[in-house]
Length: 136
Image 1 (cartoon, rainbow, N blue to C red):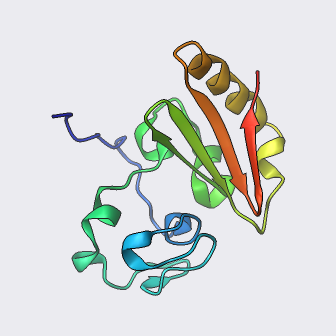
Image 2 (tube, helix red, strand yellow):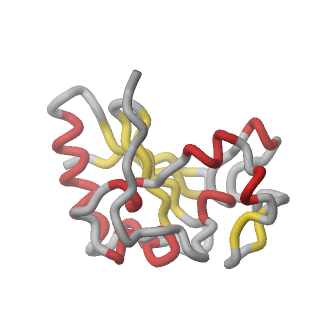
C-alpha cells in the first residue's frame, strides 16, 4: 500500500475552492465546471468536517510539489493540476481558459510532458469542451 502523500509545509488551500468547481465528482453527482452544492465560493466547504473521503483525500499538485511557486496555486493560476498514474491532468478554469498557454505555465507543462513521455506518460489539459495533449 502506498503511503499517504505529504503536503508541503506552510501550504494550505485557504480560500481556494477550484477543486470544488472544476472536476466532475460522480460521488456527489456534480458535473464538471459547476460548483459543488456544499461549496461556499471563496470560503470553502460548508460540510468540511463531514466531507466525503474522496474530497478529504484529494491534494492538488501545488500542495505536494515544493518546486512549484505560488504562481501555481490554483486560486492564482486558475488551473487545478493533479496526477493520475502516468498522466498529469490540468483542469483549466473556464473563466480564464487561455492562462495555461502563457508563461510561466506553458513551459512547465511542456517540461512535464517531456519528463512524462520518457516513461510512457503525458500531460493533458481540459478546458471548456477542449482536450489538449501537451507536446514538448
